[in-house]
Length: 504
Ligand SMILES: Cc1ncc(COP(=O)(O)O)c(C=O)c1O
Image 1 (cartoon, rainbow, N blue to C red):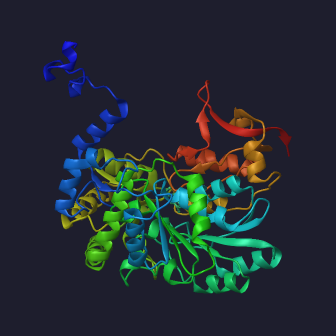
Image 2 (cartoon, protein in one colour; image 1 turned 180 degrees about the horizontal axis):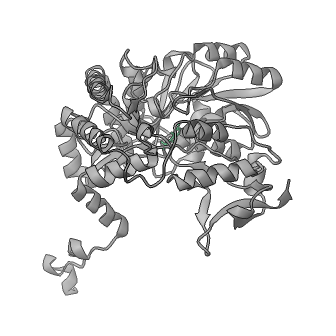
Image 3 (spheres, rainbow, N blue to C red; image 1 turned 135 degrees about the vertical axis):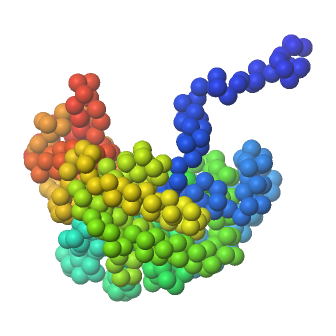
């Protein structure tokens, strides 16, 4: 036998950490060394969101828990044992009739909702401010999207959600629609009563599908917005990893009532998810649901108190605004320093560079910090102190000035109707070419173009790129936005994917 197979000292896997040059691994080690104060997802904030003994078991046994469908471990696609039990308990915890664990995030759940309820060539109503996973479902299924448009808050330039009258209009104009989808709450925590929309959908005998990616926690406390699960929705998908403690990429899909056959959902998920779902992600969902069931109310109370404390410290400061709207999820702390000319993108970057504080999202004017039950007074103080310090310094070093109203202008452009010449699926699958963005006016987009986050498309596949789109992209890039659907070409310029041979 070779000596390598004998003594541990000759073990070929004895690679010193500083020689182990895996780029992602090294980056994660560096992130841990930096130990930023996290106001981004996942909601467990790096561990404090777990019961200490459970976290310890995880730390010791992560390898041991990374298993496959061996005896006793059940099967996500044919659940009849521990996975079925965990899903049933989760359904009870979050107020659903059936719950399906997702190991490909809410994205897979959005796709499954659409594939369960619509067939090729049919119509679905979707919000213009939907996350790009929604258009992914429309493309997969070959649907005709009927858009409804949000109200925009003129002061903050953010979506206030879609009025029910918009769905009424869309249904009047398209009586053959097969499902309505809505996103609620939105990234900023804005929420509203969904019952009228549920009643409208059911009066038309169609299901209401809700992208509740940002609301996995809201069923747990009456001071949070009511969950769609409790307001008549038929299917609701939640990113458990965003505001609760499961691992990134793990979500839950819930069905309520009897309009949606669970076996059809299971069949669609079998197509959309891996045949090797991660047990680490699944067990993190089981743990998150169990923590929610056992301590959900008290943990949400704690988080709400911390958010109220942050809001109190940040209120009444010259040049700083804090978003506060009736009925919103107050754990989403949206701040704007536009009063001192600081763009949201720059505020986010300076919090990170100068104070080691990382927030979840920036737009033209605002940043959003996610406060979760895993935070403490100390972490909240670090965020608040950093913001107050920056605002106190003013915008002397601001790279690009932003003006009140810029966000509203951007949002109006983002949510504006565009001219469609091909269906999203046709445009996605058509022959394509990459062209310089500066030459794209009048061409038909073959891919979603969306500032990310939040991942709300400016252009959908099949839509004509016009001058306004190019101006909006240009302005957003100058202020630091990052776009999905735009890449850097060999000459350093931006490149977009368009449909070949089709022009307006
Ligand atoms: C509104 C909304 N829906 C869906 C998604 C997709 O969720 P996931 O990242 O869990 O796949 C996101 C992600 O940010 C989102 O913001």
